[in-house]
Length: 309
Image (cartoon, rainbow, N blue to C red; front, side, top):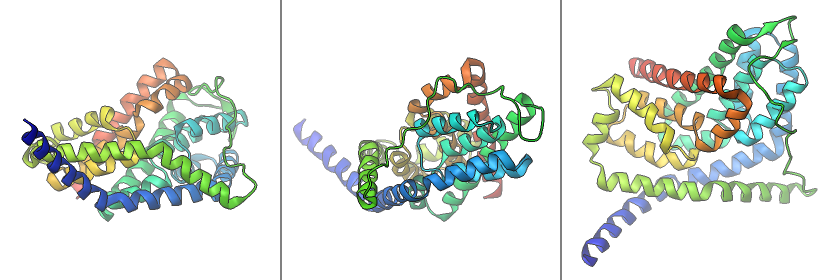
């Protein structure tokens, strides 16, 4: 028994060490760049979002909102208070929906992590998240926004009454210490999940045959594969950096890029740490609509990606 356990430990450690060498530096560089954006560009991004949200109407405003949401370095618990502050200043719900949706799905740090997946998958992730933000804003505008003028109207989709204004952690007077503290906070927030993702990836490599991954997530049974990838993204996605090793290995084992796209949409959109805050901001009815939208968009995006690629 001891010999068996030792053998399995050696195998798992080998796969774990292999994954570390593949993506460790992507994680480090992602943290540093994400912290730089947070310390040096966060206020500019949010000021730009506020200016655009009050001055640029229509689809152009939603496109810019989705871009700024992706550029924002904040996690969900930072994004919702920002959106609450925007809402109190009269910014429309459709703009907030685009900004929040794309911000949930992607940020500068996660973009750097995702470069480990290759240029094609990275492009799919960025484009799908960008489009998802725009579509979310359009649907809110069409179904829930009663416009009274170009920039003011009745807010009917979000309820931010329970959220205070955002708290700024980057306040140290020395800018270099401020950056260092931000990097340390990011390491502390992601390190455990990064290691967990490496461990799960090693376990998959050891105990799940590559042909099983190909059958589950490949193009052979496309409809089932996309639905399975979108569904698996719900319980397995705990941290952006932590899932990169798993996706990397699944792609190597035969996962289609469309299935990866589905997983990368439902994962962050339904991450358990995000759902509590979203439930409060949306209310029960709109929360269910949000979940249905995420699943439908994930499967549809995966189908389109598989057709194109």
